Amino acid sequence: MSPSKDSENFDVIVVGAGPAGSAAALIAARAGLKVLLIERGEYPGAKNVSGAVFYGSAILDELIPNWWEQAPVERHISRRNLLLLSPTTSVSLDFRTTAPSYVEPPYNGFTILRPKFDRWFAAQAEAAGAFLLTSTVVDDVLREDDGQIVGVKVRRDEGEIRADVVIACDGVHSWLARKTGMQRELHTHELSLGVKEVIGLDKSMIRERFQLEGNAGMALEYVGAVTEEIHGGAFLYTNQDSLSLGVLCQLSSLVEHKKRPYDLLEKFKAHPAVAPLVRGGKLREYSAHLIPESGWQMRPHLYSDGMLVAGDAAGFVLATGVYIEGINYALQSGLAAGEAAILACRRREFSRYTLSHYVEFLRRRNVLQDFQAYRHAPNFVNSERLQNLYPELAARASEGLFRVDGKRKEKLLPLYWRSMRQVGGKPGDVLKDLYQIARAYLW
Amino acid sequence: MVMTTHEEKMRTARFRVDETAHIVVDGEKCRSCSVRACTYVCPANLFVPLDDGSVLFNYEQCFECGACYFVCTQEGAIQWTFPKGGYGVTFRES
Image (cartoon, rainbow over all chains, first blue to last red; front, side, top):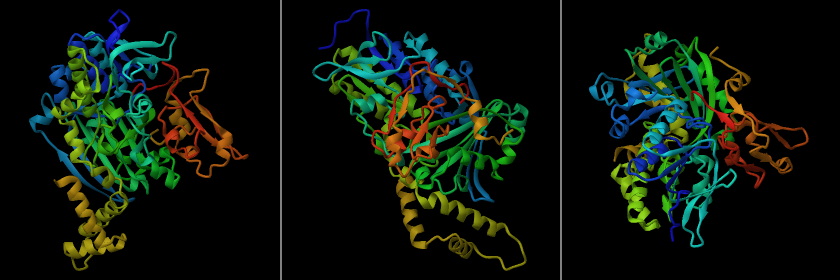
């Protein structure tokens, strides 16, 4: 039995005012539901850290037309670099474009600063009619005797708030998903620790160094020697008058090699491919956050009687090496959860059967398909050879390729063969990896 | 300066410190731990190994990332929760 409606009851309680939570709250409030959005930080975004590039501008454009005109965005991404690093050398894939789908509205992606962006986005949910309650920690759910979830327990006096549907968007730790048994304990190989700095740098210097016009921006992603033997990678993004940069380290691999994450961050900034880009900058803020990276393998039970899980809490971060995306999936899954809550409220029926429509809405938004399609990628991305051997191989082979010293020029196959033997690679392993790559990325 | 020490990094973060600790470490349990992953994984470097074999923890400059909780191999050595609402770390630019 759902409790009788009175002024104390909400239709929907959303826990966590990140992109997933604010999207869910916004769409539910627009449908006329009474929505409470609860945030533990002193403002939305206060506890949130990302790179951050928000890809999927078009998704938000459907919700808030021309959103970038009013939101605190930094730069739209028109250049991307994927770099393989050895200690001395970098080999990169440089993508730069003036294609309209990247440089004209609605753009493809923007760099953002999460404390500013999340605060703005939560305010949009408020403007749509949702109630925002900040500085409030949710410790558990409220349950009826039959197990139906009917609200949350907050760490305040008179700390019970009732609602027909609870949407957990409480981030990577998802206290709620774990307390309700919807998510299992996570393993250290499924989580990456990101440490990050925002470094102030003059606007004109940023344009010049990264060869950017106007408000265009660049995203650089690195794999290889910069994280030593740690499985992970690094990133550098351009903001208006600052750079966001950091390293991601698989937790299990940090433990195995006894490395300190901030030492790797310093090493990254000192790398010959990175140092000229950050020179003269001034540290503004240092931060850290965990990232759920095993995607499909860590997806929780997405719905139960009275509750849905979205965003990082559901492990919706696509980490494939080529893609490191989370905010877009947070938004999509938040919207899908909001849609499921709206459907349940219209039917006045809040069992897991009604809420299972969430899965259908996630499919309609292509969220589950992406994670299913790339389900083999996270293991490959964090494999020893991709992390350490191949960047070194690419660097050595390129050093050989471009070197002119009067000796006979090697053709490509012998060149790669020799480089491979230098870095200790085995042809059999390469064949295995080619199969892994094909399975992870090609079909 | 672009290259910074850990102390310089930590000075850029803002914390509102609660009187009660949101993470409690049972230093006794750490005595039998040979891994002590928390002492190097923590991005705020808040876990200090002591000579007597236990581990000292200071919750005040915690980023609430949870890394220590996930890497801990000693059952029950780390009691982890979020700080009271509005307390703990507040990011402005990240």
